Figure 1 (cartoon, helix red, strand yellow):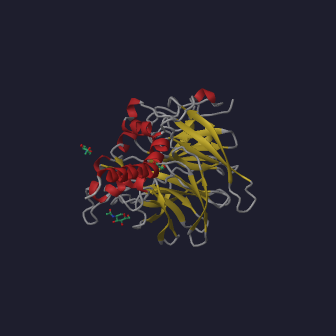
Figure 2 (spheres, protein in one colour; figure 1 turned 120 degrees about the vertical axis):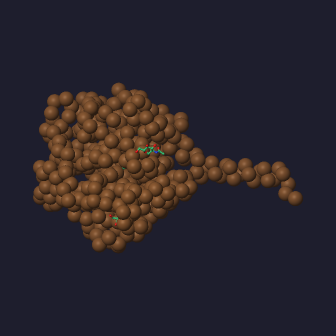
Length: 410
Ligand SMILES: *[C@@H]1O[C@H](CO)[C@@H](O)[C@H](O)[C@H]1NC(C)=O
Ligand SMILES: *[C@@H]1O[C@H](CO)[C@@H](O)[C@H](O)[C@H]1NC(C)=O
Ligand SMILES: *[C@@H]1O[C@H](CO)[C@@H](O)[C@H](O)[C@H]1NC(C)=O
């Protein structure tokens, strides 16, 4: 017969191990217990919200085309996001937003009230879901041709699963979404985009964001790995089933790194390294891609803030949107209209001695933080315009304030 105290000791041992391995990171970093969060007045920025514009809400991701000085935003409807957001298990497909769109904003043409001139890009000829022409934007990135004439927009499209014969929605709570990666092309100043290609593959399962490689292939994060639904989906951020995958330009896809806890807005740096942040436990894993798309892990940047999406400015500095209090961010997501705001922060990640081969040294600077969530509610992406020093912040949650062309350093 098992000796009770011994059994108890083993159980306590397991609990402690479980705590160590899984929960401690999740609670201290993910939920933000015990973190000191600074007020926005500590930072030298004046902030403006772009508010009340239905075209510019729930903009989850942005990409700044430095050559044309155009900020591209992937925008949706914050109320509908609560129903349809497969990346966080919102799978009520019938209530999804039907007006997701990409905005091209001319950041050198201010309009007065803190806003900028913009175009909502049309997508003529794009088939969408069974011919409805609709897109369901999540992550986004872009590339520009050498002279900046043509721009490609790469989007994660969270399309719902449908019956291939009838086109009717399946029960997406059972099937999960049918996410794809879409490539569009546009020209400077145009008000539409041309659809070039859809990448659909079983390996493109829970895509969150995409980074385009030199060879025309692309890397992306599956934030829940292969698990679209079910208990493994729900536990994914604890047990680390998130992955990084690569598809060649011909559309042959494979997993190239695994074991991530909610990997999200990855970035392929101008230094050739692939940066993969974690929204669940924080930190950025750094990889060196090899010619066949496989990855060599070279470094880990220990930044204990849950991180959203990464972007790079023209100086080569990486800007990371962070969620100082993960739990409050979730509450704000539930309640976008009530302006229940969560603290937000932005970190600059600067690689030092970039020219020295195999040296991975990073300087981390908190650029702005908003303890009360007054001005930067639930930021998911930050783009730095190095030319003017402005920060553009946007988030999937806030109804009234995206993006916030905020800071002009005082
Ligand atoms: C899904 O959305 C529909 C509206 O389209 C709503 O009537 C229904 O209650 C929602 N279902 C759930 C489970 O929230
Ligand atoms: C980062 O951005 C992507 C797409 O822009 C979005 O799906 C994701 O939710 C963001 N990260 C978090 C933790 O919100
Ligand atoms: C998923 O999307 C692809 C690409 O459009 C399509 O061929 C396929 O039929 C879709 N599958 C489901 C279940 O919706």
